[in-house]
Image (cartoon, rainbow, N blue to C red):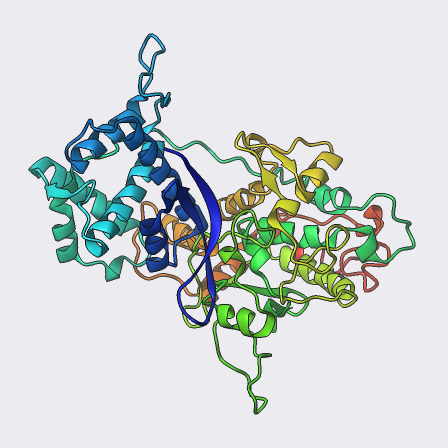
Length: 511
């Protein structure tokens, strides 16, 4: 079947507000049921939409290659899934269907089948079409497996107390006629962390700009933006994408820890907006960040731009520490990172004050592209499928200090989050393994917790206090990261108060 996949903007009413989405255009025009599906479920992530389009195009290819072979859609779908798993090429290399599909693993087939199930259910419900993969009564064995999976998923969730057992029983008494198959079990592979003895080299040597004279301001001689993003990952455990949602107003000095930064990263669309959007009477308008961006700047949250748009920044739906304002609290560990961040942030704001911006985001283009535009994730870090980080400021900084940026070595941007988790494991904030695990998951903003109870979650204050106790133990044992004399990196004028440098640094080791 001849078709193409395009980006399109759908308009539903006279407000003319467009909804961007991928569409499939066949020789008969736009595949409208898919457009209707995306409009109905407008909260779908871009990745989910792309996976749905991929699944539908595979199904279209299969249907066109097998015209007249099936009387019922259910039968056709069953064979379609089988061919995804087995491929369509015979042992002698021949494929009369012309598809020439190679076999796919259950991990690949599962998401494709799941997307088609959802889309087919939508068509059956809204358009009265016959479902491709209807539910049937589960066998006793299948019901037990479903119930076990349901309970496992429930036990891992921070929101387990909201789950309904009765609803679960109803759901688990049914299965899809056609399944994707199960993946073989395996043990978890240990994650690779960024080398803890090279982090200061990375920050102060790797992010130092070449060809800038020594007399230039600090913000000209160093890529402070890259340093700050790296510290948010290494010292607060944030994912690579999360700093790209940070507003300038989201960073203040911690009122309880003078000289340290208090950083909150808000939900891109549902988080509470800053108070600088005013009504006609000069009063702050209380609204979400999505409303704020639209009304003040004519923009969308960064996760709602297409993945190929430079403004795009993904969002992994992390655990939020405040359900009212919907933000993540940044837990610095060891605590010295909050102080280093605050010191560098002050110099970065001096640079930002000289740049015109038409958005509230903290990290912007400084030298490349349109100065002042949102800094793109790809400009900072871009990993290949092989786990190599070949492009971006982070990869360049890693190479400058003689390391190879590769996931297997822990030297890509994501390795910093793993190092943060390592510090939490080895410092042990908490009084017992269960409490330590809870604090770690809370600090990393994971919604799911493995092998532990889900009730009695710690508060921000409790996690902060536990980390303070652990940090004190680290300092007493001489195990906390010690920032070297910053003058050795050319920072003579960055620390005039002698906080980190000189013969008697006041804050070395987090003291």
